[in-house]
Length: 293
Image (spheres, rainbow, N blue to C red):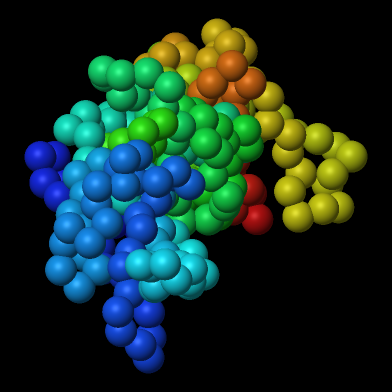
């Protein structure tokens, strides 16, 4: 059993032996007589005592005296009393992204200002927690999603309140690619936009791809390879990318990455940019074929 005493408060402990009367009681704190001079014995009615210090308390009963040997009961179970500490921890997530990627490395840090020699207790939704001030997730999975809190304990049975709650959502998002314009006039530029992601300050870099025909895949469902567009090999900080003056119908897609190891999103669905010149040429050829019949 554990009890927390509010700052400046006290709690009453009661000791009794079943089935008999005439007992006097001794009290112990952390295995030592409490108080050390034994002054608490029989100073409170019915085997009770009020305490305001943290510690592990127990009691035992004694009966006899006045020339007779004193008979002692067994020592009772221990009751843990924590004294509330006004310092409330602050729980910080590094990096400070509310939505975490599958495979990313993140650290929750429990900060307590004032006092030293703290040990830490964590309240999580999934795994066994450490006693240190840092809770590390080396490779995030869906099971790491949930709410996290921490508090501090230290020698002398001092206990802080629970910290603020940090909520983590682990996922692998899929961006949406938009193109403008999707019908290309001669000499015009095309703007690709990779959307649907939390952008700033989430640390994303965006990567842009163009479909290139692969003759070895013509008998497969997809006969294309996707190659990075020039200028996007290292990714772009902005979630838009301009292609100057493309002349052919082409399909594009994007994805995003962040962190030192570039943990990536899924690829977007491909989007086509149509060349008006090519469509017009195909239409003219079709008309000529029809007229020649």
